[in-house]
Image (cartoon, rainbow, N blue to C red; front, side):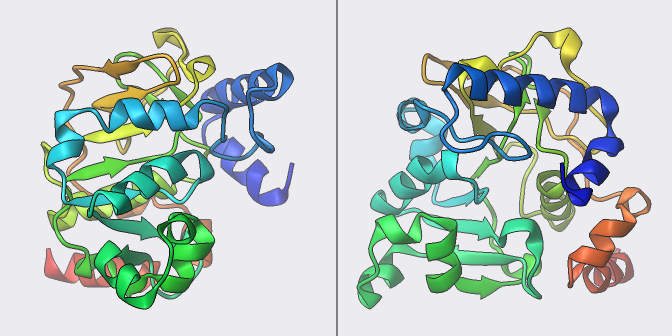
Length: 255
């Protein structure tokens, strides 16, 4: 385990126990596509899970779609582009001086860029339009990456805290509304019992998730976090995310 991964693991030991078990199960069963450990794992059947998700009314009605950069969500990003939806995707690990990119299928067509390329994180980093958090318009559908989920809407990520931080920022800005669906794609191996889930105050519950076998509507009515508790943001996040301190200062000043 890298030093960074160890740091993430120490943030929530109870969550890390679940992560380690899920990663091992995915790799030992051969379900994982590529390395699972320390990642949002790709899995056999991700394309089928994506197909289930795009049948929902919420997806069909969405125009602006936020999606994490990880491989299991490539089928959803590709489907969004072919359906004329505009994608908003983060810089992987938020390591640049800008956080987000807009991937507009109309602009890609003008440039002759294939949707298949633009659906990958490498492709959208090259061909997307750079944006600050404040520049992202209202979002109609939000896709996050997950290591483990429960049927009631609990979610565990890989431990970096990027998804929770992004979601908190967007909620505080009003970019994500209380009724904006939060969804994910996972393999059925990643669905865990309720007693294995640890949810914290900054965690956003899922409204839906899809696996290779089913679509689950969680019915979760728990209150959503209203924004970012900046005192809970970790020192390494301020260190490693170039724009984060300046964004905090702007948001606190505008509160």
